[in-house]
Amino acid sequence: MNYQQDELYDLIRFDDSVLEFIKGTALDGLYYWDLSTPQNDWVDDKMKRTLTAEGDTHVIWRNLIHPEDQRLIIESFENHCENEADPIDIVVKYNHQNGSILYFKYNGKVIRDDVGQPIGILGAHVDITKFIEREKKLSIAENQFRGAFEHSALGMALVSTDGKWLKVNKKLCNIVGYSEKELLAKTFQEITHPDDLDADLNQVQLLLDDKITGYEMEKRYFHKDGHIVWVLLNVSLVRDTDRNPVHFVSQILDITHRKKTEDELRQVTDRLTLAVRGSKIGIWEYDIVNDNLVGDDAQLRLYGYSKGRFSVSLEEWLSSIHPEDVDQCRRDARLAINGEKEFNTEFRVVWPDKSIHYLRALSLVQNDEQGNPSRMVGTSWDMTEEKKSEELQRMMAANDSKRKEMEQFAYITSHDLREPLVTIQRYLDGFIEDYGQNIDADGRHYIEASIRASNHMQELIVGLLDYSRLSKEKELKLIDSNEVLTSVIEDLNALIMTTDAEIVYNDLPTLKAYPLELKLLFQNLIQNGIKFRKQDIKPRIQIQAEQISNGWQFSFTDNGIGIREKDYEKVFTLFRRLHNKSKYEGSGIGLAYAKKIVEIHHGKIWLKSSPNNGSTFYFSILTDNL
Image (cartoon, rainbow, N blue to C red; front, side):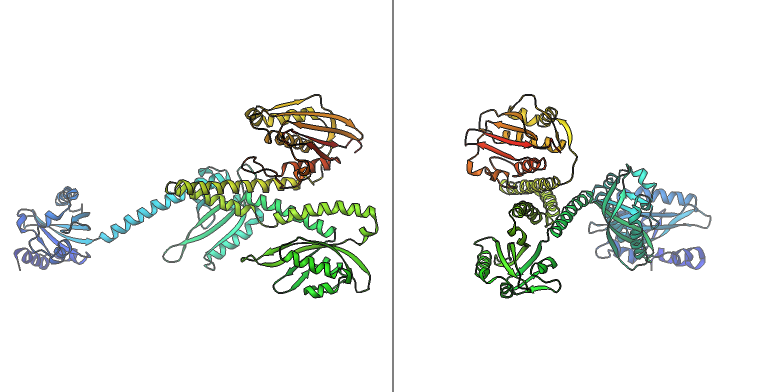
């Protein structure tokens, strides 16, 4: 036992405060600093093992103190020696012999001689290295969370258990229109639509009661300016170590645009459903693999039954058909399943009461993942009365045209097209943004081509929805078609200036028409004339009008590439294109759009043209007597 240890034991025996000091400290090492003779400094074995690779007994304690903290220790010692009420209680860094840095909580007490002069410092170390490292990691994690929170593409918020906004990011402020300061002064209840509040609060209570771990719901917020914002809300709850609720973490995605699109599609679907019901069209589906044909109630009635269930095999269905039509129906079904012909056929059915009725059936064949035909989905309708009357046949032809148009629209819009496209675009844009520097030119070309294709699909869907809206009831107004044309030319100014196009017209009439639709009609025909222009020739479009019985006849003559006579009807068909998209952009909707506008004005549209000699589109507006 050396001198310092003897002295320490004497101090412990005769100075109760020293013993109390040692007992009250959780130790990872002791030291004694001799203020007069540094060579007498003493460090216990535990401290040596902590600070040296081999527990070096010759280590000089002071030499292991990190240079940044040496002055801190000296000042703390000096202050404590002058005033013991000022404790030695600091965090000190030490250099381990292996090069690493250790952190210690450092407590000390001055030792005085018989006359009260300080002769040394007795101290204790508590190793807090792991705690410091953990604090650093927590700090890094907190900074990362803060960055992700502030710059998230989602609205994010921390919300108290009583609903008060505690912290919000910029995206959330943008979604609801409030500044951060304004939002922090409110609760989520204040900006939630009352029809959604109870459902939200019920989920909150389940979360607080620890019955669920989180919830997701669609709800409405009131924007600062008063309009409704639809959001997808995802909420989780943060609890402390005792499982007490601390605050909610909310993620908010703005889905207003999606909800608007869903509403538009729902309206279109509802109109289609009512139209199908009103026309007494039966809907059926044939499972090719399992040989099972099922139909709705309307389909059941078409075969003479008032109740029951329409579910039969193909042969059972054929047994209800007039014997003279069985072979034709079997052949048409086989050709359709083999992909050789569209199933679009007329036939007679024999009802249970032996009466004969004429039906027409139309269907599409769908394939499985391997490309094999798996099912037919179709419609049927009764043509009996139409067969009895030429006038009714004419009406049926008109209804058939409308029905085909509705079916075409239903086939396209029955699938949720727009939401997957938005997702595809978001991921492609994100891929370019995040990994664009790491892909070659070919890869970038493929991705950009995909983005362009999805954008084009979006345009087709929007155009199709616009096309469907033309069926809505409108009010005829007396309008000056010169003013309408002037407005169109102003709207197309950029296109006209870019192509150096010339629009020529004389005084046009004032007539009864639907203002927006007439403007769209003029716009589509002018755009069509400019789009299909000859290379290196300035497009020129001449517009004229003459009065006819019950209305007016207009003509739009261009000097473009012209149209073959056999294609006259095709240009007015929805999505039919006569030219390669890479050469002439477009959706194939414009002239179909124009045809429908003319029809709602009780007129007709036609054209005269030949290749390389331009085209003249004629249409009539027959609204004078309406």
